[in-house]
Amino acid sequence: MKKSLARAFIFSLIAFFALNFLFYIIGYSVAGVLDLTLNPIASHPTHSIYLLVYPSKYLPWELLNNFINYSSLGFIYLGGFISLVIAAIVAGFIGGSIGKSFGGWALTIIISIALFIAIFTIDDFNLNYISFSTTLVEGIIITVIAGAVNALLFGALVIIIALITGRSK
Image 1 (cartoon, rainbow, N blue to C red):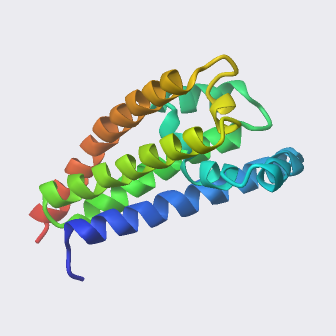
Image 2: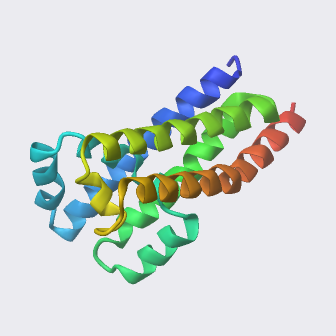
């Protein structure tokens, strides 16, 4: 398969979106409160975008801590962590070189941050998922910081995968 920055970006973005949505729906179904997810989508359509990118607003250790602390909804946070890991691995394999792989991963996180900023700006209902007392600017800052940390921490995984696959040729 041909390897490039665009392929690393597109495949990691698709994997990230699909896994986030899947884990979110399965997690709420297992907890028996799926209507808590579907009702906000009816009145706030931008919430469907939130379902695609929700882990990028958390720091990795927050996801794992929430997994441990929330018994019935913990699967959602574990799924968010797993989706970040799998999307990073996909970018590492598909990119070919270290630069292209990391660039594709960084674009995936940048798009996630941009989508968060867009849904915060359009509908402040989604801003309540960060904190009920957060202003728009604070929500954007929190999301950008968490996205940058995710890009760098999981970017290291992307670099390791790209390095390993590059040496195996």
